[in-house]
Image (spheres, rainbow, N blue to C red):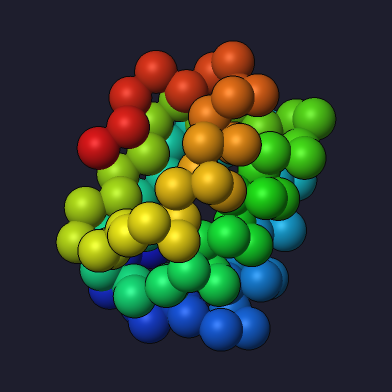
Length: 87
């Protein structure tokens, strides 16, 4: 649970590599971090390319995901087999 931590910019890049490499992480709550297009793109691209990610639950509330996030999110959703809940 990393909600409300202002993880935009460089912290988002570090977080993306950690999330993608952690095969034991199954739930991720990054609500209210204002990650923006750049931050979410980095995170979703890292997860798309991950061979170990097993995230089953994502809570993306209060992130104001707009059209700029649609492609990276769709690309990630197209290849993830573990995701069962997206809010």
